Amino acid sequence: MRYSDPRLVDALASAYVLGTLAGGARRRFERLKADRVDVALVVAQWESRLGRLAGSVRPVEPAPRVWAAIEARTRPAYAPRGERSGWVRVAGWGVGGLIAGAGVALAALMVAPTFFMSPDQVAMRAGEKLPASYVGLLTDAEGNGKVLVSSLRHGRVMTVKVIGPLQPPAAGQHMVLWAVPAEGAPFVLGTVPAKGSSVSQLPDTSEKLLSKVGKLMVSLESTASPATPGPVLLRGNCAKLW
Image 1 (spheres, rainbow, N blue to C red):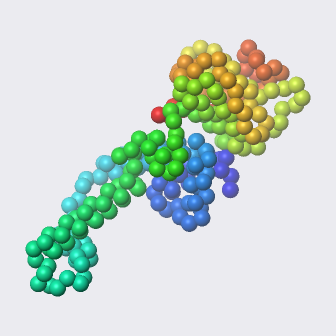
Image 2 (image 1 turned 45 degrees about the vertical axis):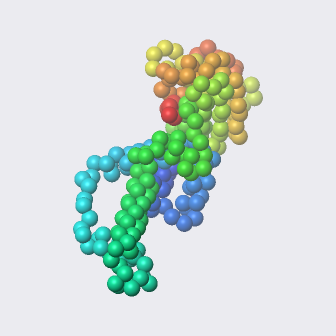
Image 3 (image 1 turned 90 degrees about the vertical axis):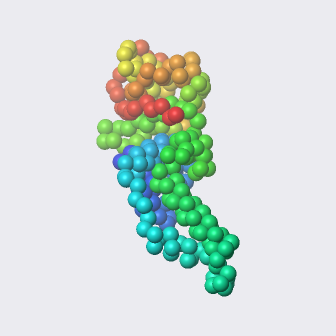
């Protein structure tokens, strides 16, 4: 399965949040989400989107028979009928209400966790921590995901991970990563490996370098530190993950 395709990741994330992704497919997607920050970000976005949708629905008061059915199913079956008055009845209603409330809360948490938790906490619920970071997913002309870029918000280190096959540059050429600010000329962030991942130092914190950057791109260059971009190979957005 081509997990480098952003459209496929988006479709899987929506099914995952809705609960329609099940079995082995769900377990594979959970492993992918734990390994890739961009996938976890898409999941958090879907959870936030569906959370707002759920919040727009008018609350419905359950019919009395619903509560009666819950109370009947949760009341101790071994208690004699005569003893169901007094504390047993109160306990039955209390337990029924508690279980019903817990069920409603759990359902809301599964459908719209961002009502109760931040995206970072949502990620922690799945077993990982997503600290405040700048994240970029660069794609080719066909929309295939190729490179994932990430850096802590106040960090000075940038991680570049190749997530889709890239054509290795010819001898003496480099794939150079550029930041494209809303105003001003693009500037070099570093180079992109042909495969695997790389970690490089930044000249300043990500916050100072990327706070006004909305786009990233990769070009093919004859030097690792060009003054202006050459032929562009990949493009993508620079997102704030916090």
